[in-house]
Every structure is written in C-alpha cells, then in structure tokens.
Image (cartoon, rainbow, N blue to C red; front, side):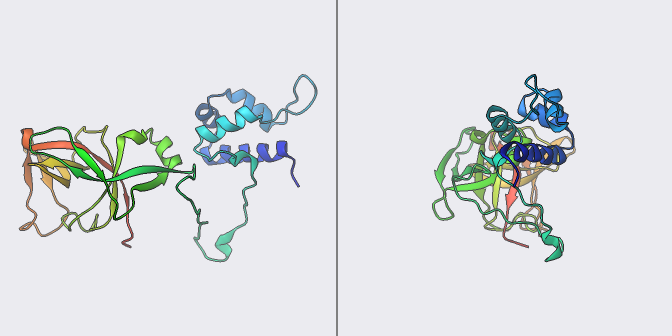
Length: 238
C-alpha cells in the first residue's frame, strides 16, 4: 500500500497528465513549477528526504484544478472499465454538498417591458438548484453569482432545446455574438432565442423549422433587452 506521500505524488502525476504540463498545474495552483518538478523527480530537501506535497499545497492543487477537498489523499482507480462496456465512463454520484458540483439557482424569470432589470422566483417544481461541474466552472472563469438555471418552455428552439430542458444563463455576459443563444426580455416576456446579425440589424430567431409560427423578430431598443447568454444545457432528450 502506498504511503500518504507516495499517494499525493501519484495524484500530482495524474493532474499533470490531465492538464498536459506541470507548468499548467502550477499556474492553476498558484505555486512554482520548479517545485512541482522537484517533487515529481524525487529531489531531496535540505534534510535529505524526498520532497512531497504538504497539506497546504494539496489544498491549493485541489482548489486550482477543480477537485474536491481531500482528492489528493485518496487513491483513484485506473482499472479499465471499457473492457466491460466499450466507451464506458465511470459515473460520479453526487449530492447537493458535493464540492465537485456547484449548485446554480434554478428560477423562473419575471420581467417587465422596457425594464432592464428582472426578478426571480425559485423553480420549486423542478427543484431549486441545478448542479454543474465545479471543474467546468473554474475552467471557464465563471462566477456562480452571475449564473441562473432556467427551464425551457415551449418548442420554439427545437431540436436544439426541448420543452423541459434546463439551460444555464450567464447574466454577466450580454455582449451579442451572431449565432449564439440568449435569454431576452422581449416586450415584457422572457424568451430564449438565437441572435443573428443581418442587414445591419440584430434579429431574434428560433431554431424550430416552422418559420410561419416562429418568424424572426427585430431586436431593437427598449423592447428587446438582453438578460444573459446561454452557456450550458442539461437535457434528458437523446
């Protein structure tokens, strides 16, 4: 059985493999790349003992690399489950307090025509939060307090988004990019639409091919206010 020091060193190697280089791991953890290299190479300290990952560094590595607290102190099996089911991946069971998942408020939006602000109320029917991977949140440089989870209503964005899908909206990003999807206060209604630039104008468009029901609408002035950009979707539709 590996000692605590050996286990942490092996987990450090796993982080380097995951993030490609020791420099990248060091950057995420806010430590010196040379020190990580010394640990990996088995360099000895002034006392003659091999350098290792101390408690403070272990926590920095976990936090910077999107791992839950204590990850550095646990073995992580490498057995190949693809031999049982080709292409299979292990399922990570998580609860609301799992540090590997960050809980985003799941809400209903209430907006008024011509008003830039919005109000929210908990989405009790589908649960009050939506979990997203903490690792993804850190990698994208997102702030949890800027994110909202919203349940899609209707079929205007099918086949990309179905009624009942949950989307995550970054309210800190209102910069328009043609082809991206946004939640918009359109004449007092919160709608999910794809924004397109055409003939010098911004248009709200639906992905649904029935353009007679879902024709594009001009996004202009106080009748069309961007609430945030859609950055993630959680769906049960295969």
